[in-house]
Image 1 (cartoon, rainbow, N blue to C red):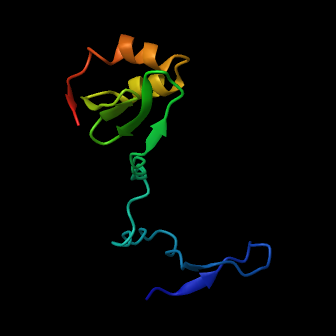
Image 2 (cartoon, rainbow, N blue to C red):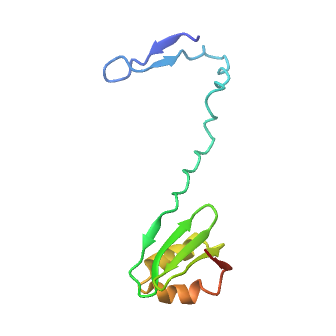
Image 3 (cartoon, rainbow, N blue to C red):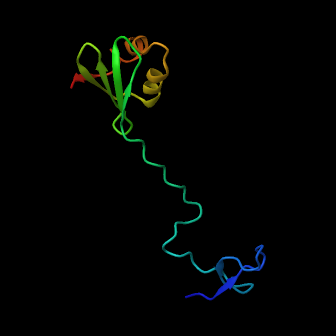
Length: 118
């Protein structure tokens, strides 16, 4: 194991142990295999799991959106549940944020995406 030294510039005078730096003129040791390179971007967090969102609408009872498969499931008050395929996240978000969920659905989703009854 590499020799360790303590950072004497820390407020308490003893910081976290750090590997001893190489002498002047010598190259830095290769990075440890267990750490990713410094320029590696952080992985994206996983998308949220699908969950049912009730809607205040006279026509639509609730929706569920799968962020991985882009499937929107729409439950209607009068019965019937349908899956709409290939719905982008921004369309789903627009539906949730709309003042009229039913109006947004009719204008932007109903006949714009393939669908099937569940």
